[in-house]
Length: 218
Image (cartoon, rainbow, N blue to C red; front, side):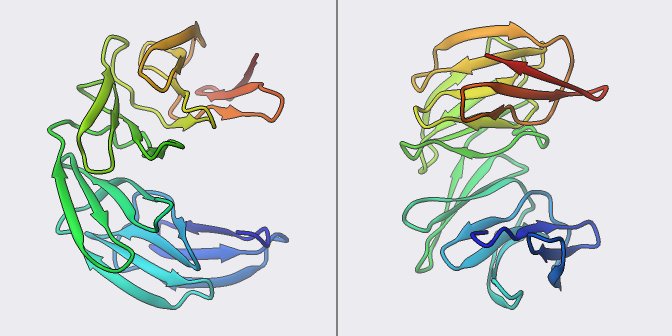
């Protein structure tokens, strides 16, 4: 958050907020297991727990819940208009509007539970799957492109300001995928990872891999 606080779901399950010095601000019970990170939606914190999405105030009070009818595996992410998007285990993209409303889109893919739902600057969504590689869809669920010739995309991913996706494939390659789905370049990192590549301010790409290694690429 703006004051340096960190908000994270725990395995208890609780929603925990600590300030920049590590002091506990609040710890609030969640209605079920949380399978992903929390997201900031205006002045609220939204988290997927159990079979729903839940909005909490910055001091930990529950403000709103929406029952999705199935557990979320990827997301939530929040659009510029305040809509919340999340992907369920069965490959259903859920969109919950800021003022209410709940839309569902069947994607007919198997999202990788260790991947992440990333929102690109143009509003499209990127995530890894077990059967269709890297998928890019519109917020309404319509497919824009897929990259399925580099094996499963089980790890988290990052999208830069130009719409380029950075991800490590199941073949242990660091890929830079342009906004139109073309592979700009790839390099072998030699090890598996589920962690998202981190893009530094100077253009360095950091990759943490299994075995306790940190790599830096230009």
